[in-house]
Length: 403
Image (cartoon, rainbow, N blue to C red):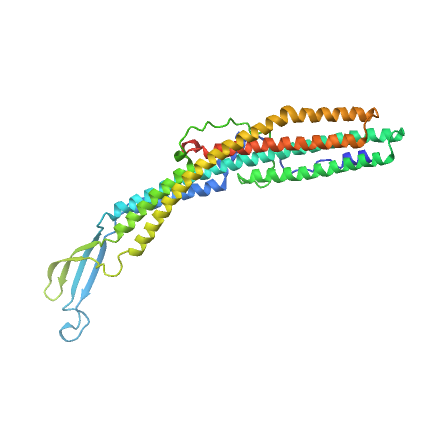
């Protein structure tokens, strides 16, 4: 009765929607519908709009002035009115327009690299989330296998107790182990569902419960690129170029502009018309844009420092990812080829000896616990290899590889 009740308690909960999915499908789905990428793409379009705006010249100005009307004495009424209609045009000096365009173009290029970085980060997150969900799915299968073995052991223990070959406490201990296995299944199922939701969230899924079908088995990338070509360094370089262009723009803005105007003045009293010409230029006594120039210069210095830091970080992350991958592969190989086969053999011997009365139930439980721990470590080792592989793929990606 206990075994039947325990088995019934393992009925999987009903899920609203689930779909088998490969890593390639997960990467494609995230690339197509990720809110993060949509925001980054919008930033690029906004920068392109600002770049177009930066190329426009100042608009001409139309000016109408009416003088000498509604006064006193001879200027009463409109007889002595003078009307002037003129058109003025500001001419930007000091290369302002060119500097403005270059700054906008540099910022546009920086947003394009940020988009590439966002895409690379997203794909890295998908690889990691996929590997974690696959590992949690394996843990569910492992927990179920452990439950089946615990149920089988409970049956054997009950038979030996009934035959008088084991004390009743052994059967109780076996039932307790089976119930503990039920708890592990429930916990593994909850963690798996959480990992599935985390994976689906990367492409905006709400009710999705994707089921990864295979481990992350992408080939390790061949690291043959200069770290200076990595995405993070490329972004830092683009930000340096943008800061330099902004500094040049602010420095050009300190130079005064000239506004020229030409028009016609009509004298109402004589009906005569005269040409009017004007020119104006601000005098740089107080505001010479010195504050913005100083700020832009500081931003340029900070961007150059961040570039140097990004290059050093790229080298370190590449080496760390390579070392982590080598370590994970060595551990995984050891567990697969030596530790797991020996643990399985130990359980087999313990079970056969227990059935034959040569070993106690505690001997079997110890062997089972050792196998359970090792198989869990094996799943963790596979996950660590996938995480290291994802990290190495991320640090070796260039802007072109994410297009």
